[in-house]
Image (cartoon, rainbow, N blue to C red; front, side):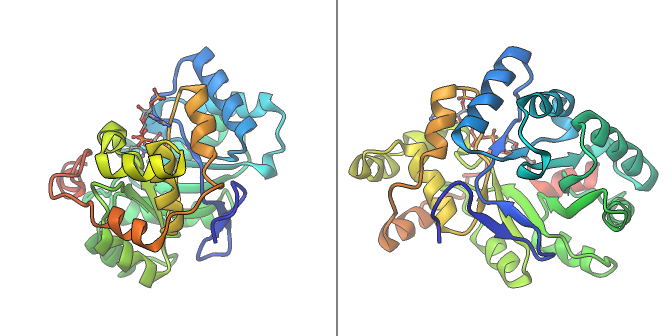
Length: 279
Ligand SMILES: NC(=O)c1ccc[n+]([C@@H]2O[C@H](COP(=O)([O-])OP(=O)(O)OC[C@H]3O[C@@H](n4cnc5c(N)ncnc54)[C@H](OP(=O)(O)O)[C@@H]3O)[C@@H](O)[C@H]2O)c1
């Protein structure tokens, strides 16, 4: 049931992860970041999604520390950067992430993209960090079904989460179905499709019916689908708006209409298998 911004999804190791979080990709300007994080906290977000690649872990860590919110109330996700994958380099990099984020533990650590070369070594390092309780949960990002299956041949710990591009034009229904069956939580990046979907006519009509914005309808679709969702905005009004998605509910029919909006050319980001060969 989708009820409020404090809703959580229970991961396969028992960790409770907020279902609606705040993405901080491209939020690197000190003043804008401060305004954005303060507004996000004020609006009720407690989960923050960063990555080594975003070059803002230290800024996020500083702002969260200065906010005065108790560490236990916050949920911080970060990701190992592609060039740092491998066993020793992952351990070293995450040590640095812990320092930059000014935390004793990371709540969720993700492999940012699957890497053919470092596939098992990176995960082995993740398992060690998990065993040493430096991370509360470990997961993957941009992993397709065959990557998850390959990981399962040697992994001791199953990924708790797969974070991938999902929005109404790229619904990933097959992968989502597989992950659900496997007990791996689904998390959507670029949940608003970075723009295009926001001006879609069908979404616009549903939004009009409820007196909500297209972004609010899309976030509500993710939440009602059971997906963990991390919209990003640097605009205070939008940050608050994206958290104000609990006063209305999409009908089953509207959910199905949005499910059916998937397009063959809907993907915005890179194709994981192309990256897989390169990293
Ligand atoms: N694992 C991965 O490989 C991966 C890849 C990409 C992203 N991510 C994560 O996912 C998060 C979200 O994805 P994203 O940043 O790519 O895209 P997104 O959240 O789908 O879209 C962000 C864009 O939408 C605009 N926006 C936000 N709320 C809006 C609203 N209510 N009305 C109109 N426009 C709105 C933002 O503009 P303003 O900021 O100007 O308001 C920004 O341009 C990232 O921050 C990052 O944490 C992960």
